[in-house]
Image (tube, rainbow, N blue to C red; front, side, top):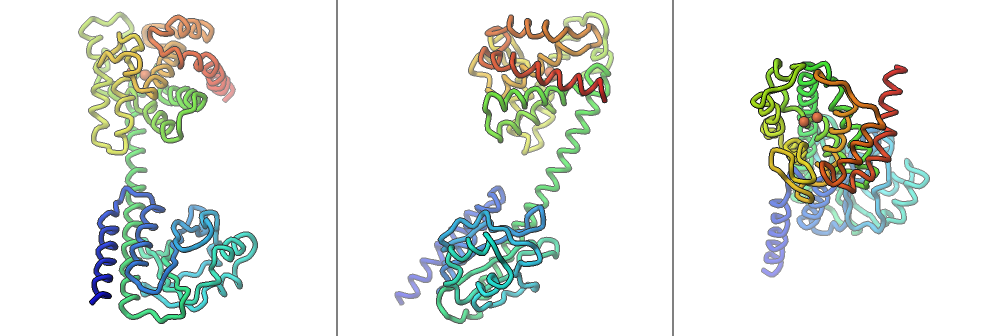
Length: 372
Ligand SMILES: [Fe+2]
Ligand SMILES: [Fe+2]
């Protein structure tokens, strides 16, 4: 009776784990939870690991439990990896003997000191994506016990969950790739309508990313700054060509239409969940530090830091490149203008970095363009 209670308690715990699994989790986080839940359900098995194929074709440990070492740096060449081919789990005796035979050097050393020598029995099964093995799911026991049919079934189910997750991740990545191409094509289409803005988004991205790196933004923020820069003017697709290309002064109503592009742009990217983090860059890249910008008249710290960086990069490129209605100004003139706008149009902290960073990138862009 007591055993039953414990077993059902463990089962509940495992089910809690499982209900907590989400596609948004990293592969590492997901597999770790899966492994822990499987160990709860298969008695006598106290260690486990999940290996997955890496981009270079070798296999790496994405999750492990019960080992004494960090296995994240252990890489196994594809011709040395031991994963059963079929969909059914296989029981392997003393798996470390395989390691001793096929692995060497640092890899073997880490695995040994992690305690693989203690393993007596392993239940191993492959992780499949679109019919191809891309990983392995392993439960290990330091006891010399024979897993039951039930144990093997549980492991099979868990490997299946791992396979589904890996497949979904692949689809997610593919879809993201398509979406990126769609977005970049839209940016190209937008720029193509106005010969003066060809390359603008890409240059803004270059200025902004370099500036962000110098200021010390995190990698994640820099990624957002890159995409935000690429996409920031996408709302200009909705501006009629006769306004966009007008060489003379715009009327107030025409000006108003142009000024709508940040809001229209935000509207356009709303349907892409992965662009959620850059909405503010698109919507607010024409705000000013002194609150006199548009569309929300944000002021100072109300403007998110990544937006301030893109605004600076955008303004700098706008100043230094030709437009339908005026010629671009020289680098020294642009730098003087930035200095003049410190605390007015621009965040003073960003200005400080911009004066150092932007000339370098400017030279890189234009020297490269001339010589290529
Ligand atoms: Fe803009
Ligand atoms: Fe722009």
